[in-house]
Length: 343
Image (cartoon, rainbow, N blue to C red; front, side):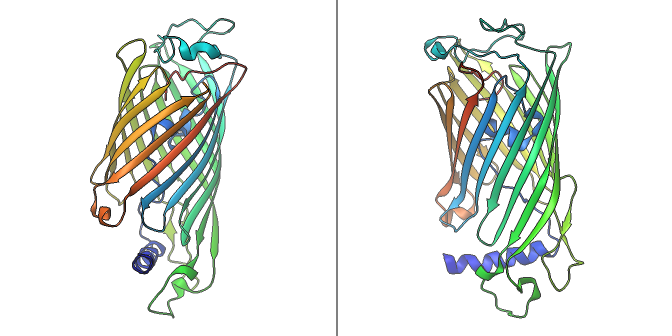
């Protein structure tokens, strides 16, 4: 497999360096558990601070690509709706709260402030030992409660991206090809991502545009005037949560990804949640994979989510699938927290 993969990667690299624009960011299957990484307007959406660490190994059986990420969201304000630590045993845990819900005992502010804010940090690395990129960004979002009892939010991230190319691992036929001449090359670029959302406790819709600067760059030491671009990536998400009982809810959701000239990638998802203790679901990505999703809440603050993609595209002849895992920690105060908007 290694000998088959290297020439293929070389061809891909050659097209990329001469202006081909396509998907440049990894596709994470657990978008409900990872919304902040896809849309900065979700920063600070919950009333607690949130830390998440994730890892995805795409197309297991190939030597890459893989992705790791770290995100931190800090909720600005004192409108905590924390539940007592014993709420794991109460029927209320996981129950959808109405928009006019009263705050939990001991909380001074309302459960639905008219204005809230959040700031955060995003760090990720994606790729393999030939082509990879890393990004460090800082986020801010503002959320406004409308007269119709739903929130409108807008946010952005600003940071820097490192594109790394290591031609030493590629076996090429033309040793005089200057695209692959020289050693490891690193390019540093500013990055801005924008996002907008509308939501309440039952539904959400959001749009984000990533890499809006369309930065030009080139690895070609012989012809640097023929650059590639950081292509804008567009994400459209939406979902509706149905309460089946005080303990059980289900949310169908949708994610559409698009980066010109690649065809859109569409994820159709349905998740079932029991009291914020256990969640499971299925997802379908058009012409690519069927995904099994599951998650557990541990010790009332720690959440672990796992996804496995069963490949349905021709790559299935060489790959056993894609693994993805996310661990989240809910921080703030001395109480546990139940999410009001996302799992």
